[in-house]
Length: 298
Image (cartoon, rainbow, N blue to C red; front, side, top):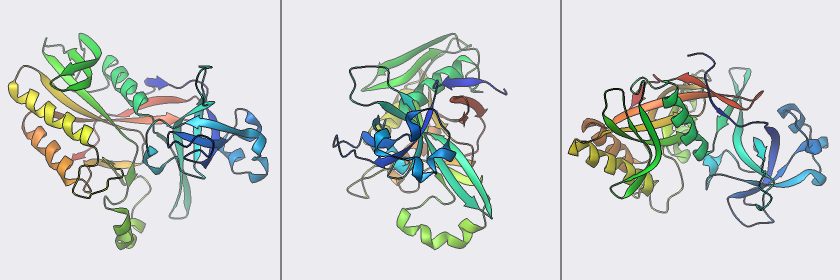
């Protein structure tokens, strides 16, 4: 399955975040960004501070509330030009650039952060037989309502069985899955790992109370998938789209035991837990199929 394109952003432009939320539009969904020379460039130019001037200061739409911390101040990003003249932002942030020095070597990972793009990747992957559990699907439809939720995909598989599939995007990974304040306790362990031995995890995000689920919506989805699965009419799947390649395995995050337990219960009651890993290419702005067999730990 080499060189299968699952999504094409089109022309991408490299930039750098000045502020998020924007100082001009007080919204976490808008960032002030710099684009050196206001033209298509690469990340080498972003590192040249002398190239960054206020005359190249633009507004960019950030597609999710926190962007998983990957689109904060000073972050290097890839953007696409907004073609709609009625929107207030000039660009949309699609990808983040993560740079890491590990064992004396410098690594760079391009990470997809746009949740709507993840949904399109999942649909394309099924169409192109990139998910081993869903081959030669006869029918695919987007955004179908079941129970009290609207799920990403409804379809009929090659055996004429109806199925429901929900997609979750996974941009985050680390060498340990723990609260940020506890990461310092694993310094020696982290240093012993190679750059591509990270754990991809979901979910992650801010919550007022640590006993609350990180994402009530994600929790509702998996609980309803479990209910539908138990009723026996539809096959149900939860697909995690891993938007990076520096990963050893995927797991539901330890920081949200409520969601972790819910996914484990759903898996035991017939909901298929799947992963799809993509490789983003900065040269052409495309997401390529990378793997569909990443180990999963629930």
